[in-house]
Image 1 (spheres, rainbow, N blue to C red):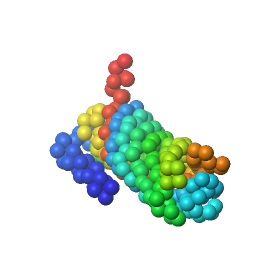
Image 2 (cartoon, rainbow, N blue to C red; image 1 turned 30 degrees about the horizontal axis):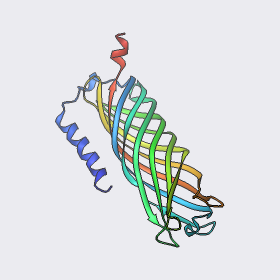
Image 3 (tube, helix red, strand yellow; image 1 turned 180 degrees about the vertical axis):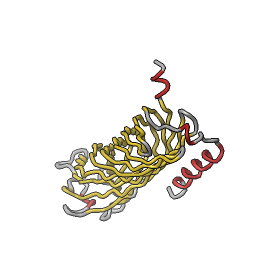
Image 4 (cartoon, helix red, strand yellow; image 1 turned 135 degrees about the vertical axis):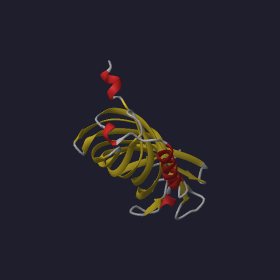
Length: 237
């Protein structure tokens, strides 16, 4: 991950330096848009043992341990912005597939292991920005949701089992874009995502009671974005 994030900014810098931007008086950020994004993320995922069940090696109730999942994210976005003078405001819906994962052995019995994976992210954000020439910088924030999967395996069977849950939370971030043509802009964004705790019930075969973990995620996302304005296209219909 320490290599992925600098690469995002390196690619964006190269694109900006090699493409001739619009003149300042040609720039207007008003209108709907669609786009794509790609980048990387890293997270702090905390597991609290609520009921040890068959996976007793996870610890006693009240015990906790952490994971550091990281990996890539990529997907698309749609939104609308309106420019009034220098101010730009709007809304953005971003949907991302993700591969942020980490695993570790049990704190009490190393042959037992646990794994966490965050595989889907949804961000619905309000945006407030400042336009200067053909540049736009902005703050954004709003709702965040994510799907993640917890997996446990043990030598007692041996067996492996997993379960998935949806997390609701919030996000705040910032970004910047440059308008390259009348319809195309590129940029980079950062988001901090705080997802509420959810209970994961993992049931082992033949187990009398499930193992229950309370899991919460804090995620940092850095991504490159490219957007295509639909203003002229829709205006021509």
